Image (cartoon, rainbow, N blue to C red; front, side, top):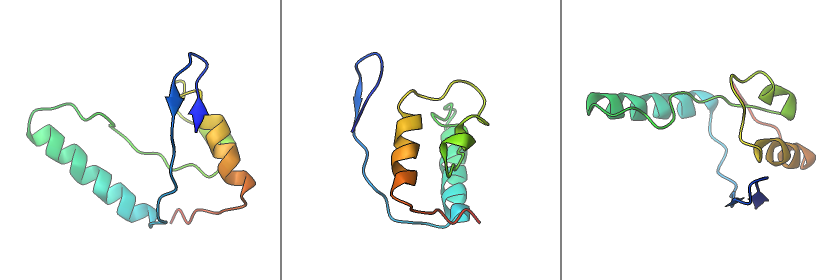
Length: 83
């Protein structure tokens, strides 16, 4: 669970580990489906991060709950296979 600085609350659940390429392909198919129906995709791109330092590489301002969420994930010493 995370609470943002403006009081919003978010709940997060672990997902099964999947290959990064599979995630990217699934996202691409969802984006194409939205665009084919004339809709603007809600999430135009997906970026996989492994630690909080990766968040500073993103364009724009990340949601304020991402830093603690990523740090909490890293504290469990889990690793993500990104290739």
